[in-house]
Length: 128
Image 1 (cartoon, one colour):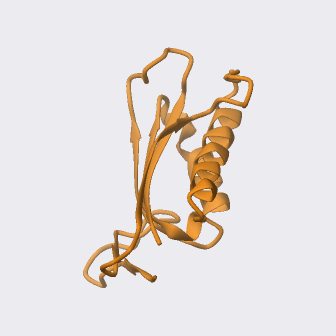
Image 2 (cartoon, rainbow, N blue to C red):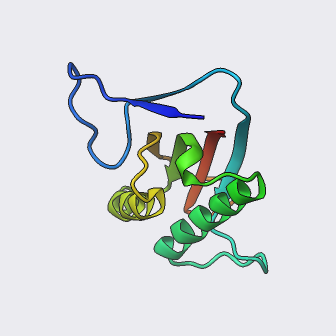
């Protein structure tokens, strides 16, 4: 199965490691990953935003692995962060975890998440 990334020449290039669009051939198996937060196995949420972002990515990757997928199967990723100053670290860690892949991606700064101590949530769609 091949994911085709779309970055048309008539658009400005992406600002960081993502693509403007992604398409998947028919017959693929789809996985919709619920929003993953920065929580460890014990249910603890660190205060540090960078640690929360890293844990959220690790949790998302664990869901992919459970479905027999990797980050290279990601079609669409939506990130939600609670502070503007988190944008550079989110992008840095996204690029690190994408490992050269550049799925279609949206990053939104929101007023808050489901619980006040949460600073990041990442949801995704993958196909294989």
